[in-house]
Length: 114
Length: 114
Image (tube, one colour):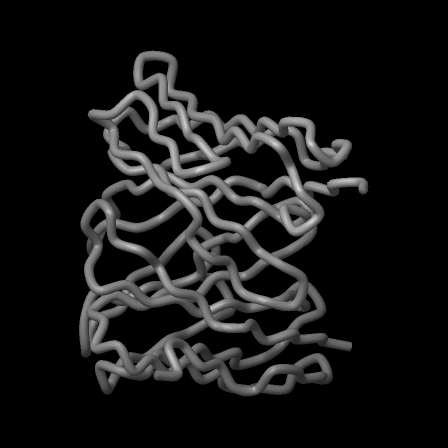
C-alpha cells in the first residue's frame, strides 16, 4: 500500500518554463489537496478537489492550475514558473471532508525556480 | 476565510521537560482541530485531533485542549524525548466553496536537547 506518491521529488526550473507535478493515491480517497510549504508560513492550500472531475481554489491559487480526471490522480500545473514559486509542494488526500478524517500526505516535491 | 495562528515558531526544551504549542483560529464555524508532526524530509503525519464538542483529549504523552469560546487550542507534550524533535502544525477544518478544507498554522519547530 503506497499511500500518497508524488513525482518528481526534486526539480529545478528556469523562469518561464512549465511543469506538472503528479500526485497519486491508492486509498480510494475522495478529497485531494495541493499545499505549498514555505519557511515560517506553514502549509498553504493552493487548490483542492472533493471528487473526480472537481477542483476548487484554495488560499494561494494564482499561477497554478489543477486537474482531477481520475479519482486517484491530482495534477498541479505551473504554466510559466516564477521564482516566487520556489517552495516545497505537498499533496494530501482524505477519504472525505468530514471531521475525524485524517489527511495523508506525500513526501513532498522540492521545486526551485531560477 | 479561516486564519490559524501558531506560537511559538521555535521551541527548545530539555529532554524530560514539557512542551506547549498554542494556536488560535478565526472562524467560529471551525469544528475539528488536528495536529500534525513533520519529521525532516517527510510529509506531515496526524498525531492527535480534537472535535469542537470536546474540551480535552489525551493520548499517552500528548494532549490537546480546546477553548471554543476563546477560539484557541493547544498541544501539550510531556516527558519530551529526542524523537519528539520535529515541526508541529495545528490545523482547523472549515467549510470552503466546494467542501471542507484544512487551514494550517505556521508551524513550530521543536528541538528536544538530550
